Length: 194
Image 1 (tube, rainbow, N blue to C red):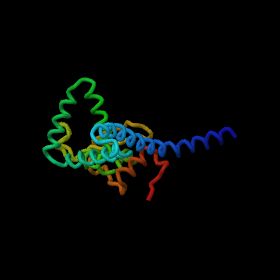
Image 2: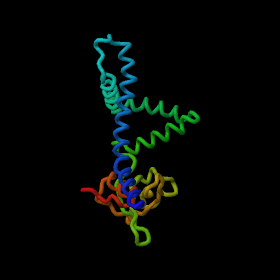
Image 3: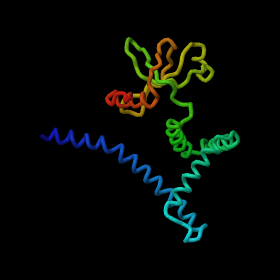
Image 4: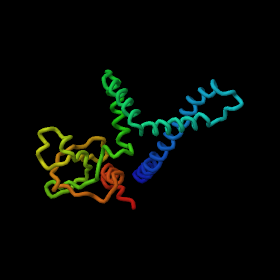
């Protein structure tokens, strides 16, 4: 009976936790932008023109404008110079780089994790992601081989392995990066949703 209760409780937690975290993150972003931008609007606008939600709406507009500006070469170059300054500051460089790498993972850009592939290793196949196909971007000692760099994430962990694999030992998978990552990180328990 106790095992049944604990299994049911764990199932409930696993079901609700991702949903609650997602809702809380959206709520936190909305409340934070309303608080910061709302205070700014209270100083700029007369009290009768301010309405609740104006700060959150302004925060969304500002984020959208920044996204548009980052499409311009000059703005990207200036931003890159600013990042280079941050990468030289002690402590800040470690924290900023960790956050940058984390958010780059979810970026809609094509960089980062590439095609989901199956890597053949001693008659078993491992699911991984091509991270580098251009030999010119590999370390010099690896450039003379017909290989690609593949990241093999580990189930239920943040870590993984980066391996250099010959082209003929990988097979492209008919899965999106998100499907493949979800499949690997949950050890295949969730399966592939179609």
